[in-house]
Image (cartoon, rainbow, N blue to C red; front, top):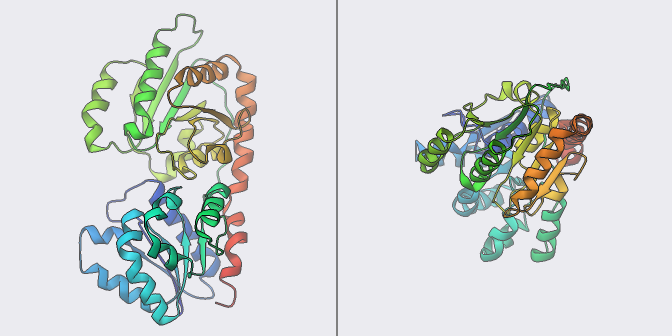
Length: 347
């Protein structure tokens, strides 16, 4: 095992959980396998094991002390409770840690974590998804080991840019929770149902796992409208073929510290523009009027106006579909590897 690269994070393989964390972690692992396997083995530890076997902590520790380089993708609790163990094991063994940040919460999280700031300042590299988060980390904590690594996807998909004038289709693909804005989507549906001048119907489809605490609310709201349907959870291999059938994706998230949501990148790859709420880093991800639109939570009239604009101007919609796909090319695995390759040379 010595000399291996260990990718440690939440893969969700035990239950095949699909979300932004697991997809990003799996993509990082697959990229490193493709680029490093001939030189040294790339292995992984799935932290979902902690939920089913507490002794798996010892398995993790054994893999850590026997690797040469650790690629670390933690969520909040992992960073809080597991990182101290990982940090000291790696210090004792002289193992480099590369922390690939998922989401946009790190700067806020560290405000009350002075010891974590000290530890993170001494690891080899921290890789946030956006330039704005990098700026915050540098300005607030003085980190000098920051390199931006945008979200990316490994795929070979090319959208067809088909136009269906008989229906306008909107998609929401994220966790089914009001914090991701499902209540905003239902209010949009109510507004659509009141329209009497539509030349073609507008339909909204939900995809994603339903939060247990939201199940009653979600099913109750579904029964109230004929505009909205729930389509279940998409398997990764079906995402792009499914999304390309839609005209726009909406994400009215209320998480102010989203990073670079994978659902937006999936939409771009599928040739689908987006309409999103204004979180901390949205302007870095969405080019207003080119790949999508940004609106303020609480100003949902703007959301409806953007939908109406795309509905009534199919030439604009087609151009934005093409713009979205072109932007997706920036976030390729090749671009990601160009950024991190130097950390693996002669390692």
